[in-house]
Each structure stands twice: as structure tokens, then as C-alpha cells.
Length: 454
Image (tube, rainbow, N blue to C red; front, side, top):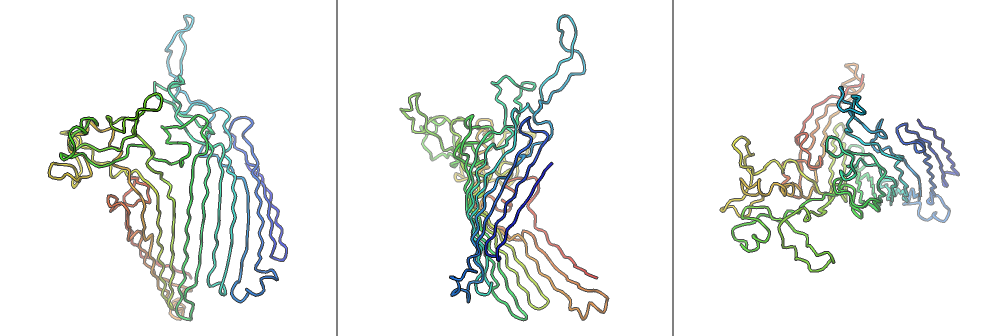
């Protein structure tokens, strides 16, 4: 349930002010946290209309500075009963209390979260809107900063708390972190060519952002990959450094507990209880060698759209790219190196042999000794550029369509994902936009269609 109001003020189209407030309620939050208020306000100044800008009006059509601040709320994917523990009630009597048989229950699924409330984001935005050369070029530049408190997250309850379901950990929704996200956004629209028969327009968008967790009251949560000072979607695992070969030092392989054809891991140096006497990272591989390798959210997202029209023909091409993202690719994890008579391995895998020392995957049959470190094979740079879609169309002249009592008839052809360039060659033939998921295959789709208006 929600209530809201909004007030706008406009003076000569030059000075703009707006203020709003929302009151939102969610029934499944804890008592005293079901309702919250989310105010927001913004001011803008179109300084291009000021008298002191008179000399720029032959080329500057619009210039507006704006500042906004607001609080937004998020229920974080929670649903009914998240503040109640889920339990399974056995249908028959299982225990005896005071000589009387009674039923008993077992926790399962979600454990009740206490004091669960709204996740609140405090948002700043400073922007400049502009239009020049008779608005042949227009766009905006924005700086944003979001400080989120009470981040809603479904975390695993430690078994040491003594709360389990059939001996397995339970999960619980909590407001458990504070995060910060800041960055810049750019949008530029240009009418490159404007003529009677031919037009060409371009739109370029780019976003750079940097995110980090500012505080975790209970400390880093390894199971959820939440680490203070790092992005929310950090990837915490072993860092792949190649494959051990027969040319590597035998003594070094003994110290690391490996053999030729095993995965080479970038180790983390260990120290004694006083933080001294480091081992230089020379030790047998273990869970302590896991580290933060990257994050799933890209640093940059870029989009470029070009639209061309020539008389009755039209063509649009949309390209996009993401840079600075790390993904864990399901497809790179299909090879397991197991020594099994019943489980097949995929063909065409670049696995290690004595005659293939520079392979990416470990030698066949080595999985039993090092399967723990196989997740390192899946983690790669997920940066990419792709043509998202190309559409070519032709609109029949009205003098033809009107004879058939048709107001407008357009034929078009669209190609989706016709071209993808990946930064890491191991992702060739896949679409990193899926984040490494193999839930559905990479596809190239070609569509013929008709737009008809009677």
C-alpha cells in the first residue's frame, strides 16, 4: 500500500522546483518497520535563458543545470512469511514427553529474520542538459551517488548458531550491509545529416560506476561473497595461473603438492600468529588461497545507436559493450577431467598432455586429486562488444497502399546478435551478456516482419 503527493513550481521555464513524498507499507516486514517515508526533491536552472547568456544564443539553444536528492525504498525480493521460521511438522508422533507421545517439527528453508525493514537508498544526482547548433547536438552529463543502508540480503545462518534443518544450514533475510555506488553517465544525441531524402542520427550512451560495501557489522560473509570494501557481486575463488608442466621445477611441485598436468593456482602468502615469518606463498593449495578475483558488475556500459533513412528505406544499427566485468562461465566448467567409465567428457577440449604443455585444462583423470580447484577454470574477463540488433525496413509509397485501402505498409528484416567480439578468446561462441549462464544457448535470430496500418 502506498500514499504519495507531489508539488511542482515553474517560473518562466527558467527556475524549476519539485518536491514529492511517498509512504509505502509492506505487511511482511517486522513490527515497527512495515511503513516508511521516502521524500525527494529537485531544483533546476535553465541558465541559457538568462540575459547574460545573450551572446551565446546563436549556437547554444539550451543549457540547464539540475540537482536532485531523494530517498528510495526497496523490499529486496522478499515475500510473505520472511519474518517467520518455516518448519516441517511430522505427521506422526515421534517423541515422548512425560510419557505422552507428541508430534515434533523440524526447521526447514528460511529462519525468521528479526527487525527486518526497508532497504533505503539515499541518492544524489547533479546533471547538465545541453543543446547546441539548433539542437543538432543535445545530451546530458550526470554525476550520481547512492548510499544504501540496511541492504536486504538472504544470508546463510552459520551452523555454529545451533540452528539447522536436518543438519544443513538455514537461510535468513537480514538488513546486513551498507553500500555506496557512484559514477558518471553521458548521453549525446546528434543529427549528423538532415536533408530532404537522407537523414542520419546517432545516440551514444555511456555509464561508468564504482561500487563497494562500506560496512558489514558481522564481518565478511564468505558464503555470500560479501566483503567490506569490495562490490556486492564479487567473485571469491582460486585464481588460475596455468597448468603445471614437465618442464617445471620438481621441487616446487612437491612443495605445492601437485604433479604435471595439475592446475596452477596463484597462492596467498601465509604468516604466523604474529603476522610475521611469511612463507612466500609456497605451500600446498588450500581454501586459504582463495581471493577476490573480480566482480560481476561492469565498470563501463556503452551503447551506440545509428539510424539512417533514405526516402522510403530505413536502417538502424545498435551496438553495445560492457567492460571490466568478471564472469564465472558455466560452459567453461563442462570439462571435469574425471576418470570415469560412465561419464563422458566433451570433445575438442584443450587439455594437458606431455605433447600439449601449454593447454588450458588439466590432464584427464586428475579430477579426484584437484577437483576442489576446478572453479578457477571458469573465471575469466567477461568484457565484450556486440551488435545487439540490425533492422532494415522499406515502407511502400502511400500512393500504392491507398489503392488497397491501407494507410501504411512497412516490410522489415531484423538480425539479433549477429556479431559478438569477446576480450577473452575462451568465450568465443558464447554471449557474455548472460553473465556466463548456460540456461539458454547463444542465439542469432533473424526475423522478417510486416507493419500494417489500415
